[in-house]
Image (cartoon, rainbow over all chains, first blue to last red; front, side):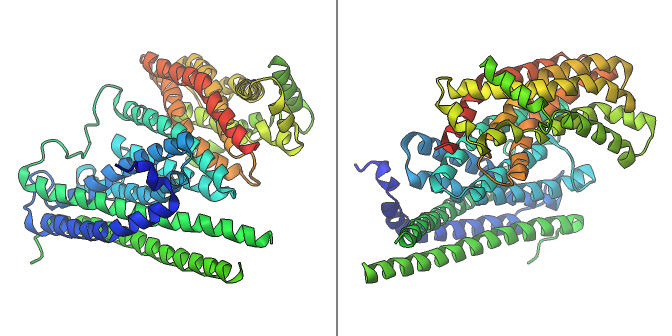
Length: 243
Length: 52
Length: 218
């Protein structure tokens, strides 16, 4: 059985991902359409939330992806630090903007959904605040990549930043919970619907989540290819310039 | 066919429109850049094969 | 290690070393706040803990690039890195120097500035203690950020973007400690969290900072 590390070879990665991309993209599009259409048109209103419950099909998946994306970047950064596979570092770089967009969608839908509850377009609810902080971590990470010219230096620095950032992101989560509610109370204004979601909402939600996951995978595969090619181009152009 | 969104119509519509717009933008930009680098790299490699 | 710390302190104290700038900035920020929010005494008293902490934090932030920049520019950083001193110790020494030259003056100035903001009388103790516990964390975390951006020209803004999110837990617990004291309620939990963060940062971040510095010095 071929080792997964074979795909650490950039060329092999591109070849293999090219085989899967059309299928993953198709599956992503299908799941998203089915999940969102089902959720939007074919589900009833909820008691507490009225028609705003329909926002759940966007809010929960995007929030889940926002966190998963960062976690994937963390793992990829560790793989870079330990095994020096360039594809890994580039995959982390590729995933960051996707994760950032997911965070923004989570924030926007979360804030909008909270409006009927809180009466304002923004509230410093612990969950929303934590996602806002996560967004800042994404921005910092992407900014550091962009600021450094040498590819390997950038990969090293950003991977260490991702590690340290992950620790502080977790720390901030607790700090924010404490700041808003006291350390041992859960976020009472939380809109987390993962628990106690009625079946009629649950299944379209699952499909939407699957859609978002597939979308993330497709985009990261695509963007990693782009990063690999861009890096190769930089190397070739540098060689050309040196004669 | 449009469900009765009632008094939250603006909120629900805003959520869906903004989320789908952001996703759409991300996909379009990613695909564009993917195409650009693929073509640019192919050009550079063709040049190398031509010279070297 | 002591020698390195003393050297950095001496450099900071010299003319052009930037000593006192952090303090002046702290003062200016505190003076600006009433102009921004209005002079109502009760309002100022309510936000005083946060403003004092924020001002101290920002003053720390502004002096971060000095930690490595001067040595980087004239090549001394390369020399220091090749010395028998482990890079982790070097980084800690510089963080210590930063705290002594920037953090400590802020701690001393804070009570005075608290007067300007109408800080509740009972909160002065908590103000000093929280800054005493928290500013070392700011220096150590800031040193990490400074190491990340040491090679970059105009790295200041990026440094802020990277460091400020890392400062948030310290700010939250520090300010909360002072706020609770001002309201007369118990403040041990935020204090313990603050102690934990500072100890963790001092123990672990130097390794990350040294790793980063090694990368940048390649």
